[in-house]
Image (tube, one colour):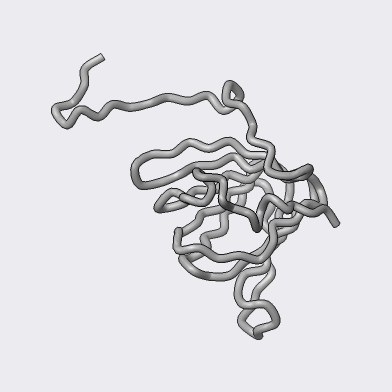
Length: 134
């Protein structure tokens, strides 16, 4: 394997070989992080809730399995929209746009963030760790 002049090299991962981080009784995840982006497999059990939050990171949510209902926009505002994102569908969430979610089925969600979510890396994502199920 040759290493480019800048000293960087490619890194390959296999999702199934990586341990799942248990966030709550209904949410688990696996993370792959580069210098400027993060890819996460997020496993949410049916009924699992991702509470309302926002972040500076741009987010792309791609559902591989299941259905995730997302409320996007400020709570109670006329601009708030509900999106049911099914397997094979993608939702792009701009920076600082409030959103919350509920799994309508057991769901495998691929989230891509730019830049990486520092709160996920240092485990200060308390809003998610409550992970109630309704």
